[in-house]
Image (cartoon, chains in turn yellow, purple):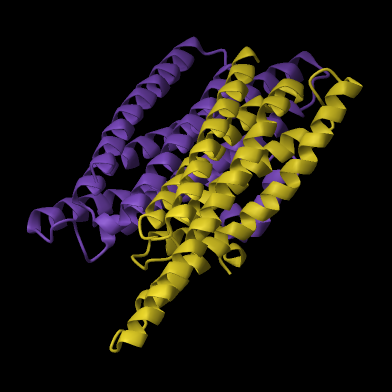
Length: 206
Length: 206
């Protein structure tokens, strides 16, 4: 598993010319880092003012972020596994008509899986970004640069996963699925960008 | 060392309420992933058109990116080490006047180190981003979404490191150093943003 490799080994596998792991796994890890950093700020004993309101808001955010960061970490491997299935499907035999039909169905199924994973990464990134304005407003001031880095990472993870959704949709023939997934991706980008701007505005106020 | 931890362990240390590792190490890792992904695309046997010009351009970019990715990986640990030195300096005794003077000098030295590391991350991120338009124009089309994710990660790493430069400059009293570092940070942000836009434009053309 990729997330059981050392960070150094993971970087080496990203840099190697093998097709996986690629951008999808890197985007998932960027968002997992972003959710983890926000969880750190939300989990600090010190809050913005020390009020019960701060503590309650941060505790609620921390619970969402803990779940999101674990699921994003899982997506690092899920993305690579889904892409490996696409590659395997393209390598299926295509000698007979029956072969070609089976191969085509396998490719479609694999591409759908390879779209669903980054779409989930987008959802989890948007969920984490939705907590960012809360963490920015209620979190301890000394940790606000960590929250700022987290927001930048989640933005990169969200848009990077979006690129992977788009590229896999390009090979899919089920127009209903393609339309639904594209609309969901666009919605998540808009929602995530709105929350990113709200978080950056709160962080800029300090 | 952080980069000898597994990816899962690294995420857990980011999420823990301990002061390190924090956003600086995460920003360095984001840029290391971005440089690694660009190195992967530049190192693919297939290029955009198969021309000698493509190969020469990608080989030159790959050499720069290989160096940048190793130095960015080193910065993951260097950032945390530099911040640990800041924390240690703040904990020095301040009973006597001599103690206080020594503590003050130690804090200033440590903060300068904690500024230099993210400034180097900014330089390396900008250097990698400068290769991105080359990779986007000469790299194999099938890998362009990987290049797009790389650009998003380098942008996050650059701006995240910039936040860490800014926060550490806030505690420094040497106005010449502060002015020089702030100008260098602003220059790298502008340069990196220009190259990011050029890369995204080339990627959008496909």
